[in-house]
Length: 110
Image (cartoon, rainbow, N blue to C red; front, side):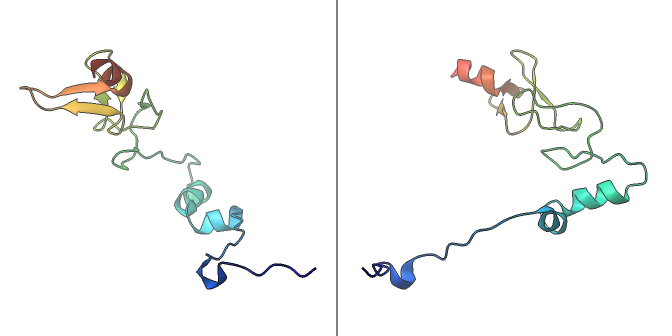
């Protein structure tokens, strides 16, 4: 019995298997990080802030998503005092001063 013909003809998208290996990563997405690790004489790769991409000057990290933060991008929750990044913090600018809430405290306020 012969195989059934393709009912989609030319409208079907081309499906290819894609394998991403170390060579592709070192030339593409992770090229800067890999070259920094290889060619940095001190051997210590600098971490970048997740919000503004500056070099991280301390060990501050978001309590929700654990992304590294620089000193300028740290937001402190006014309810529980947790450190939050720009993506995980809810900032209310309605009053005289801005009020920052982390994601977990913002769910209880709503």
